[in-house]
Length: 220
Ligand code: DX5
Ligand code: ZN
Image (tube, rainbow, N blue to C red; front, side):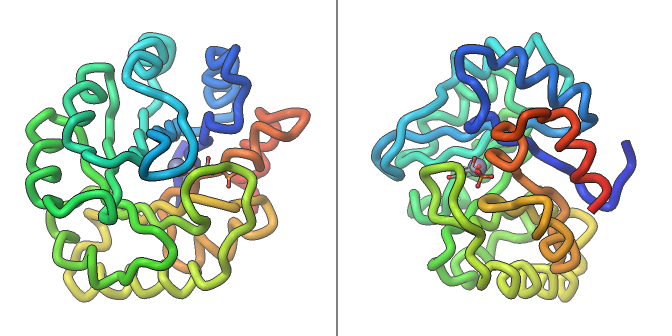
């Protein structure tokens, strides 16, 4: 599907006893990416998916596996997720003092690389790394749980990142992904602000017909 944005359904809100079905729904709806939320109960107060789950998902889909690591010591999990079959690995700027080393490590595995930023962290923290990235993941909720409300000040942050990427002629090379509280009713605003990839968990998997909901996202 060619579109002005990519949809990345977050399987955090899917039925964990039947992730195969969640993948089929992404397939049938036409979502190009699948977003995998990795939480360690330290960086965030929740515990979710590790490399073995990604390894099981990999042969069941050709979709782009977008791994969002919300973990401390992210460098320890880069190789395991790369070997498990991740296509892109994102870590949090707040989780490390060695961002450049982690970027290089992720690239060395052949995966694409993203940095994520929490809602209250200054954008100045990530700006020095834009030229080395494939993606910037803007959190529009506090990371840790699905089903929260979109933090409105995220919209101006997305616009500011887009402006900076344009100033550096990086807007075609570095994608902006927005994660948290994305629903059918606010997706258009987020796209217009500059998002290239929308993550949506509860807005897709908590509806009676996730396949239909994915298709609805492409009509906003
Ligand atoms: C939250 C996760 C999100 C989450 C989004 O920490 O990073 O990816 O699944 O869920 P919704 O779309 O329900 O806000
Ligand atoms: Zn996420």
